[in-house]
View (cartoon, rainbow, N blue to C red):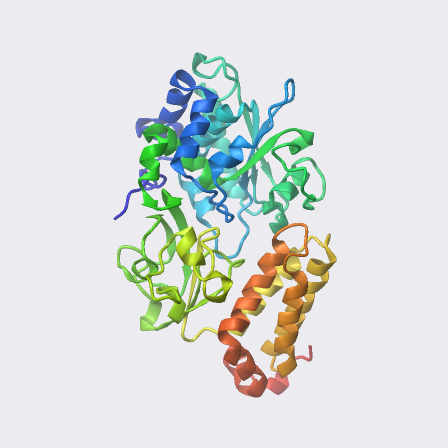
Length: 447
């Protein structure tokens, strides 16, 4: 079993309370940072750790912090992105539900490093029971002197608030999140200016994911150099993975980056293999927005090397033969799953969640969903497959935010690796409908 930096105490009874969390070493990083380190020292430790953003993009966290503008007399803000809305991703929910004080501790240390005196946790609107857990933990932190004025007698002040969103996936994009926090519709902003220069209420702002902020705690406790010893190359530390789909043991796992994908799927220590004795057909390794991998590319790259749970290895070969680690939403499909149906389900999600600001995304996502639905309902044509590929080209790279790309990549990859299955839906419509819906095709509504 690999090292656990975030979930080590997840199953300790009462760990969600301040008292139990404190007895298990909680808030040591706050004491260390505020009493023995300058804000710049904390930033340097995060840079030395090699920590990369755990929300999906994988951008170096310390570098992102270093971009924060520091004009005189202007407040700075740290925003925690807890708007976890991507299909297949639920590890942030697990962390907040089980160990809410770990996030709060990370927020205090990170806010101190960035010179923020007011910070916010923006949480997904559907996570209301989680919001209540985190709110209670924030109140306990205030009551015990870890939030508010003059924390631990250090002279550092920090107020922390939690704000629910309206349940919009688009608000996971950092500028849309900022717009929503300001009370506006959650539409992404054109960049530049970037949030580090002009973010919340026009002030310098850093937006980090829940897991990224929680990881600051072990980095400060043990040192950035120690954290960097875990993992491989530029993929350092541990990573929370939301494993779901046709697995024997789905759940949230904390792995050391560099673990082989094969071991993660088949080892009894982790996912325990494919459920019901089936064979694996495909895998989406990083949440619904990343390209799907067929069975032959899941555990081995196109070059024949072992596929590893790292940013680099999963991306090896580009989108032609690779994918992305993304948010760690690891979805596995067995041999009986329909790739066309899965692709349609993803497309329905992105068509529904598009904010509509950019016409390629607004029109393109809806168009893709309609074409995929036609194929799934047994009413497609062979030219529909090429039409989907053309729509993808019109969306990718032509929108303000990455939602358009997130909608296009899964469809393009599914056609690239499973074109014969899309063609089978055209040539065998009756069988496809019976397999997926259990009824004859002439009973399907016209689409």
